Length: 186
Image (cartoon, rainbow, N blue to C red; front, side, top):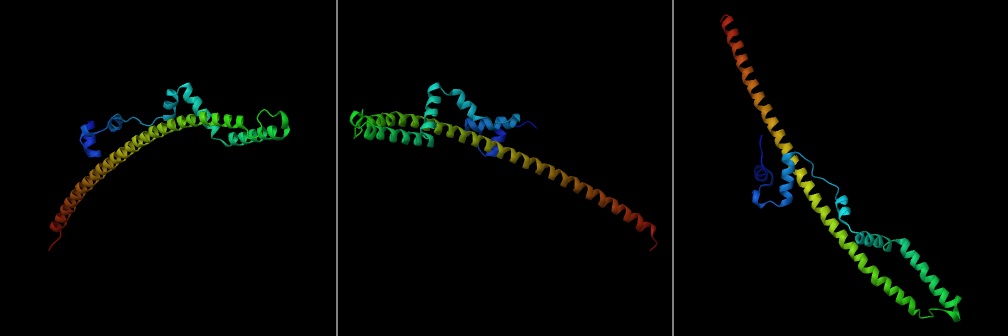
C-alpha cells in the first residue's frame, strides 16, 4: 500500500498538503518511513551553547539558590559587624556603609542581566520542548489513527469471512435438509 504525504494529510489531518507546516510534513514523513521522531532536545540545546551561555546559566543557578542567599546574609552580617563594632574607629566603611551599598548595587547591576539572559534561554528551551512535544503528540495521534484503521480493516475482513462462512453453512444445511426431505417418506 503506497501512501504519500498528500494521502496522509487528507486522511488524518483533514487538510490540503500545501497547508501543512514544516513540522507536520516532518511528522507525516516519519510516519511513512516508520521512523521515530523523538529526540533529546537537551543535547541539541547544549551543543549550541556558547561559553558565555553556560557561564550565565551557572551564575543564575548559584545566584538563585538558598546557599547564595544565606552566604550573602552572612557576608552582610560580617561586614556590618566588623565596620560598626570591631573596627569602630578604624572602620574602612563606617556606618551608613556607603561602600557596602556600592558593592551591593554593583552585584545587583551585574546579576540581574545575567539572570535575565538565563531566563531568556530557558524560555527558548521551553519553546523548543513544546514544539517537540507537539511533534511527538501529533505523531502518536497519527499512529493511533493508523492502528484504528488497521483494526477496522481486520474486523471488516473477519465480518466478510464470517458472512461467507454463514452463507456456505446455510447452503450446506439446505442441501442436508433437501436430502433428508427426499429420503423421508411423506
